[in-house]
Length: 86
Ligand SMILES: [Zn+2]
Image 1 (cartoon, rainbow, N blue to C red):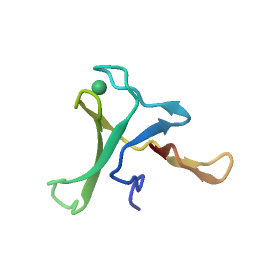
Image 2 (spheres, protein in one colour; image 1 turned 135 degrees about the vertical axis):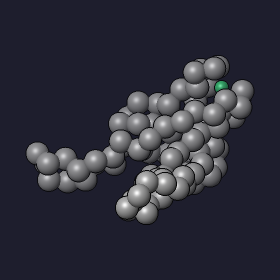
Image 3 (cartoon, protein in one colour; image 1 turned 180 degrees about the vertical axis):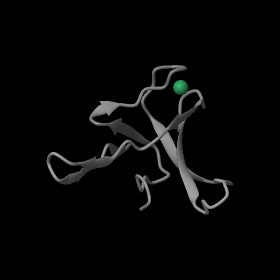
């Protein structure tokens, strides 16, 4: 499963409804990028997906992960990330 499927465009991003805010300048407009890091462990041949978002005001890179998960109580998959294109 790929995470997030965020578009690489200027946008506001929320995590479980909470706006992502730049730690450097408190702006909320980012361009998200999805990176793949090869995890080099014996027996594990998978790529580890890693998200960063670049603040469009000050350029600070914010690392984040997608906390989307399966909710066993409700029996549904809960998507955490939402993207609002500016
Ligand atoms: Zn910033």
